[in-house]
Image (cartoon, rainbow, N blue to C red; front, side):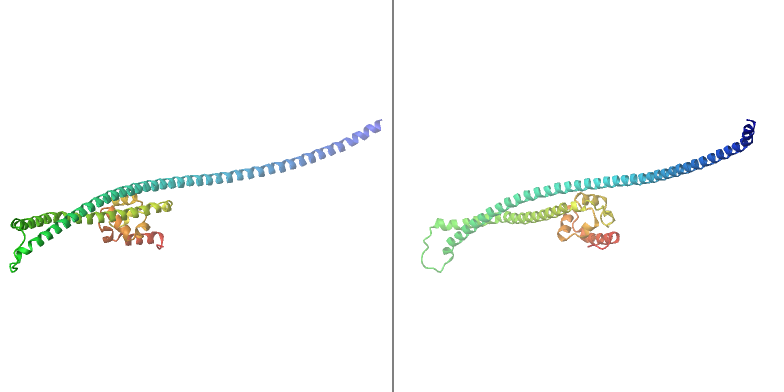
Length: 285
């Protein structure tokens, strides 16, 4: 019994040391696993923070893109409204031109009818005057020996009748000339209004094609001030290209619409517009 006791007493320090060693090894092993776990968690946290930062950057970029898209949409909407307003004004102007053209056509028909009436009256008076001259012809031939069969009263009335017919013809001559002048003037006005209507119709048809094209500063053309620029925009002219591509018909029509006869030609609006367009946007196709 005592021998066993002494054996245990001898082995106790060894068993204690062994326990301490195993305890230290266990603590060391557990601490290593805990460091790995902490390191993995830190790595994950770093990845999450990086992903969050990238997400915030992407969110900010997307938000800026959305704001830019909204600004572009508002600009496009404003341009569309401006184009619709210009189209409405051009259509209103076109309707007014058509109404004026119809009124002038009515006046033209009325003047033509008056002219025809005056011509008929003139022909009647000329025929009556010729008949009166024929009746008075025998009295003007003194060498004929045959006595005149015309009665004295009829012969005496020929001269006053001829004079009266000539007076009637002379009285109608100014009216006839005035009617012819009015007829020519009305025909010219109708032709000018038809030309303006054709030009405004073409501009209205081309308005949709310019919906996405930014407006040019028309006042950079010498001779075009703010008032004229606003009038041009109201009729659908918003770019230098449009002015540079005017033909003679459009040049004449807009000179009449703006009430500046030959000003566009005299100040070379087309040439100035072409130079400005090519300097800003490249060669004009």
